[in-house]
Image (cartoon, rainbow, N blue to C red; front, side, top):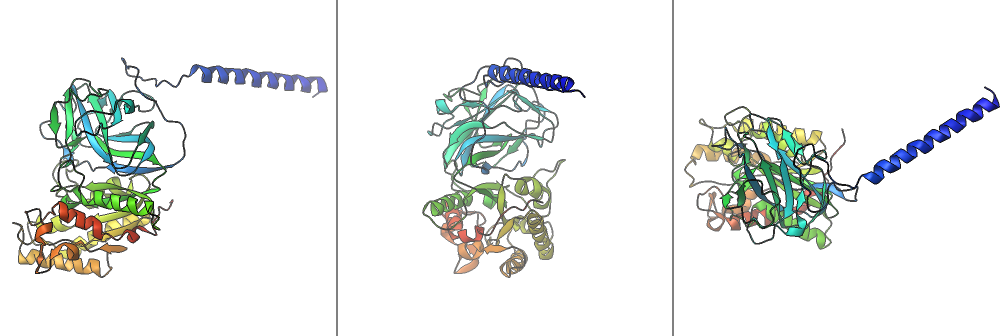
Length: 444
């Protein structure tokens, strides 16, 4: 190649770089940051769109386990209605993202409009107006979730304080059922006719519901927490006898204690706490249907525990329903081996596992001396350190000292199986926060 040819090639390359730079500049300048949706009829929305890169760590602030398909929604689902779920943030963040599930749907679920906002704090469906944000999905204002699937929203800039109610609202215009739900929310949520997704007044939300629908997780970009504790259990973890709307499940107490201890300077990990309890859940047995409603702990552990955002520790309080609901006498060996299987799966992901002893239930209609013997055998193996990395002894802490086969009266909700608010507070208080140390997720 001659020098003249070489200079010509270099000049051509330089000109190409200039042209490409100009094109990039024009493209960026033309992008005003407005979300562009593939759904017709998208309206401008309050607040910011997809959040830019920021500092912090993504953690779970709230979650719930999909438990089944809602009865009565098999054909139409909730077509033409807005569902406003009220969820409670365990840890603070500067941005948020939402997971929506169609696990129990038999057809694709169209969500044409969804939003997130902070509650106005009055226990109604009203939102703090300036916090209303439209959710997008891959830049679109709507999304179609296949049957059996779930979707994660784009990130939105929204400052969420800890211990705050958050409103997650969805609108589905077309029939799609059954509705994936969590039946024992212990929290009032709301439904309105029509697309009222970004209505901040709450006035159209005249229907109250005890369910969470579609929404299964709220993640936040947090400087307050560096990981997530996932509590995996049954109705006792679900908190079905706690006061509705008061966030008095034992997991709520645990989250508050951990945050307060860290703020006080205690040498403890900074974690958010999420609740993956399902009432009636068993270690070994599935419910009916395909996919199984109230899927066994073994079947749902990967989805509901191991896949939670930035999980560091799993706390397991499961096994009492294997004893109570088995038509024959439960085999303690099988229950313990099932629990050990969960622990092995967590260890394979580098997660620490804290396990709970099974609390007493004499006086409940399902109690028998034979079932009590099974509970005692399972607890003996848990206490001996043959199941979990660390143990919280809820049995010893809540049983009646004068009749150890029963809950202490003030800790009993009245059904002799589930704790009262005071009992849940006791569970959260006796949990050794130091048991959460030494955890971390290994990259495999």
